[in-house]
Length: 177
Ligand code: FES
Ligand code: FES
Image (tube, rainbow, N blue to C red; front, side, top):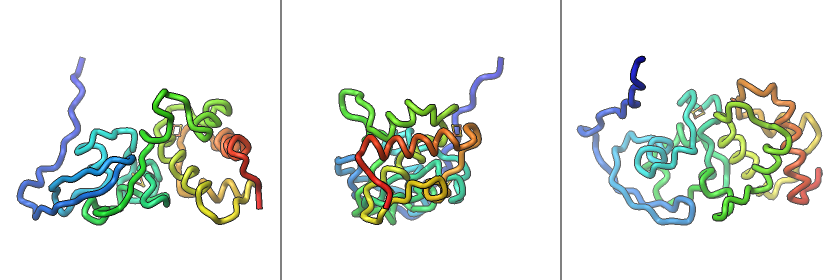
């Protein structure tokens, strides 16, 4: 049996370093990092918040979506240095401390909105951010497809995710504009 290879973290010891201080899931964190370090790598490797997944690493799949000052953003397209002073929210902050699922997570569970789950943290963070925006929601099939258009899922065929978004809106008392 072949042994699982540990992911290689690029040696960035020769890079210029920068101090960053940001709020992640309600806690202030302060680190010295490479100027080239991605926010996704910062969250995963510096803070151990591996719920933020990484797929394409070039802004296409949406797996790495987190909330940056309340708005969904690609953590693979954001440098940790750019996040200095910002408030970041990751999937680890979404369920209650006692494990009770957030209504968006509950809706995914009820509607079978996931299979492998790789895309799910990014989906949930995107939906959460869009639900918290002041802009009116369009909960028609087309509106939900547009809402999900920045997140790729290779397993589900999306129908159950669309149902999950509608169910989450229901659980949160959100109505269509
Ligand atoms: Fe960031 Fe794909 S990993 S968009
Ligand atoms: Fe597998 Fe979406 S559930 S990629």
